[in-house]
Image (tube, rainbow, N blue to C red; front, side):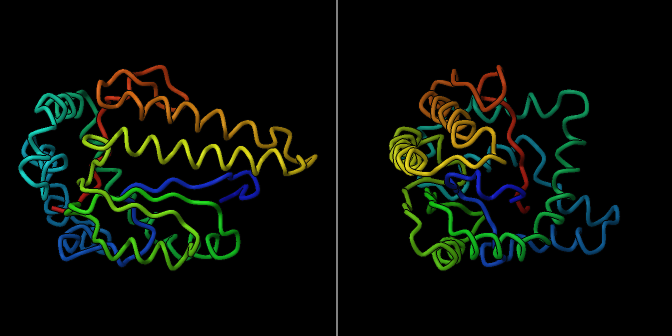
Length: 232
C-alpha cells in the first residue's frame, strides 16, 4: 500500500481483510491479542501439532477431496515446523497477526481509493475463514472477479490448475493495461517489476501439485512450511 500506483492487481485466496471472515473459532486468538498472557497463548497456539497441521489441509473437506491430498504434505510441513526456532516463529506470527488486523481500516481505505483489478479464488469448505468474507471483498471491490471453488483452506492442494488458469487471465489483462499506461518518472521500474514477480508466482502455482515450482524471490521449492495463523 506504500506504492499503490505500482500495483497491477490483487490475487486473494482465502485471506481476510475484514472482521466478517472470523467465526467463533477465533475467540481464543482474539483473547490472546487482547491479553497476551501464557494461558491465552497456549489456547491460541494449541493447533501447532501434527494433528493441527493435518487439519489445516483437510478439515472441512468432503472425503473425496481430502483423499486427493497426500499425507506427506502435512507431514513435511510438521517436520519443517519442528526445525530449531520454527515453532517459535509460528507463535510470533499468531501474535503479530493481531497487528495486521488493526490495519483493516487502512486496507479498506486503500481498496476504496484505488480499486485495483482483483481476482479472488476461495475454497468454500474453509473452516477458518467464513464465506461472509467473500461478500465483504466484493463490496469493497465491486469489479473483482470472484470464484468460489469446491476446495478448502489450502485451495492449491486440490485446485492448483484451475487457480493458475484464472491467474493467467488476470496477468494478461494487467499486462495489457500496463502497456497502455505511461511509465511515470518517479517509478523507474514502471510496470515490469511486478510482472516478474507475478510470472514467478504463476510458475509456482502451476507446479504446486508436484512440489517443484519456485516461489517469489526464492530458489527454494514451493513446498515449504506455511504460516499456520488459524484458530483452534
